[in-house]
Structures are given as C-alpha cells and as structure tokens.
Length: 155
Image 1 (cartoon, rainbow, N blue to C red):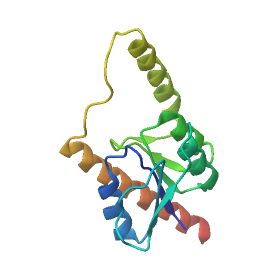
Image 2 (tube, one colour):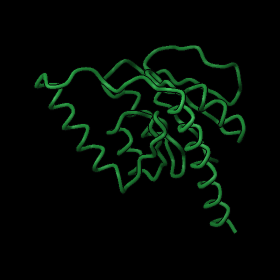
Image 3 (tube, rainbow, N blue to C red):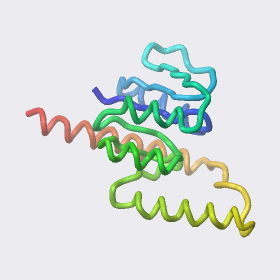
Image 4 (cartoon, helix red, strand yellow):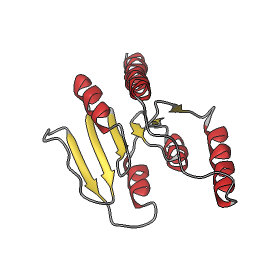
C-alpha cells in the first residue's frame, strides 16, 4: 500500500500533503526531531525520533518501501530514498529522479561551498502560491503514476 513520508521538521507543504493524501485515502507519516501539532485523523501519524544528526533521515530510509513517496527538501535524503526505489518530491514540487539527482547533489555542493566562502547568503526563498500549486499538481501526478504502474504489474 502506497505510503507518504514527510521529512517534517521544516516542511512548508504539510497541509497540501494532507489534502492530496486524504483524497486518495493514503497513510501519511511525519518524521521529526520534536513534537508538532498534526491533524486528528487516523491516517496521519507523527514519528518523533531522537535528536541526532540525520536521525529523521535514517528513520525514513529504514521504513520506506519501493513506490512509497517521500516529501523532502533534503537532497542527500532524496538520493538515499531513490536508492530504495521510493519516489521523492521536493517541497517546491520538483520530483527527484535517477536522472536529476546527480545534478541536484552537485548544485547543492556548489552552493554550500559558495555559502562557506561568503559569496552567497541565506537559503532558498519562501514558497509562493504558485510553488504550492505546482507541488499539489506534481504530488497528485506522482500518486496517479504509481497507481497506474501498480495496477499494470498486478494484472
């Protein structure tokens, strides 16, 4: 059964995930380093992990299965989940794939070096309404694609 995992500590699109998951009757697990308020629906769960470097990432990678969906802006986590044949979507709506993860990792490394050198400051800009709309559309398309493939493989 398709399951959605959210790298939840700084995820700005949790309400959008709830909306799409509710439409498809999918379970959602938020993974975070601290407690947070979540909707009171039986299909939404919060997994609080111990405070440690990459503890949430490690928990997600340990529990994700092929064809599950992971929502994260963390590119190394996206890479680890792709290696487990999960589907991964960034919080801006950009799907991470085997075809683009190498470029994403290289860009991340370059930006990190530029920040360390003081050439650039800050992180990504806040999400705009069109980013949220693109995320909703891409998540919906990802779920439909997984379901189509699963129906074909089960016949």
